[in-house]
Amino acid sequence: MQKYLMIKRLLAVSVTAAMFGAGAAQAQSGESSQAGQQSGSSATSATASGNAKLTSADRKAIMDMGMSNMAEVEMGKLAQSKSQNAEVKAFAQKMVDDHGKALTEVQTLAQSKGVTLPTELDAKHKAMSAGLEKMSGDAFDRAYVKQGGVGAHKDTLTKLRAASKGAKDPDVKGQVDKMIPAVQEHLKHAEQLAQGKSRSTGSSGSAGHTGSGD
Image 1 (tube, rainbow, N blue to C red):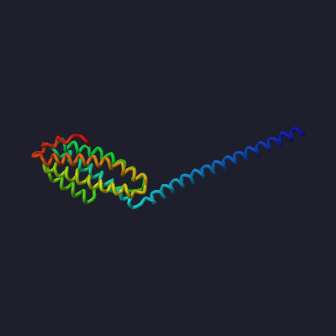
Image 2: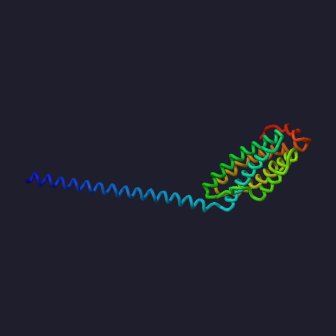
Image 3: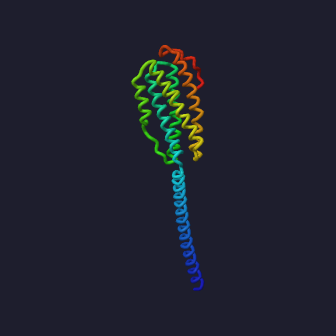
C-alpha cells in the first residue's frame, strides 16, 4: 500500500513539473516574440526618425540628382535617334548609360531616405527637350552638345559642388561626391565635342578628333 501511494505521489509530481515546464516555455516564447516585435518596431521608428532628420538641402540634393540624371537619359535617347554624327551619337549613348546607372543609384538612395522622386521632367527640361525635338541635322547636333552636353553638365556640376559642401547626411554626400567626377568628365568631353562641332561644316564634320577621354 505504501509502495502504491509513493508511486502515485511520484506521478503527481512528474505531471506538475511537466505542466510547469510547458507554461514556462510558453511564457518565454511569448516574451521572445514580444521582444522581437518591439525590436522591429524600434528599427522602424529609427528609420522613420532618420528620414525625418534629413535636411531640406539634402532632400533637394536628392531631387536635383534625380532630375539631372533623368534629363540626360531622355536627351541622350533623343540624340541617339536624331543625330547622324558618330561622335555625337557615341556621346549620347554614354550619357544614357552613365546617367541611367546614376539614376538607379539615386532612386535607391531616395527610397531609403523616404524621398519621392519626380517621374517626369520639370518644365525647364521639358522645354529643352521640346526645342531639340524640332531640330535636325547639324543644327540638332550643335544644340544638343551645347545644351545637353555643356550647359546641362555645368549646371549640374554647380549644384553638386554646393550640395557636397552643405550635405549633412553621409549617404547623400557620398552619392553627390560619386557623381562629381563623372559629371566633370562628361563636361570635358562635351566641351571638346562642341569645339569640334564649331569648326564643322556638316553633320559628319571634324568632331571625330575629340578623342575618347570620357
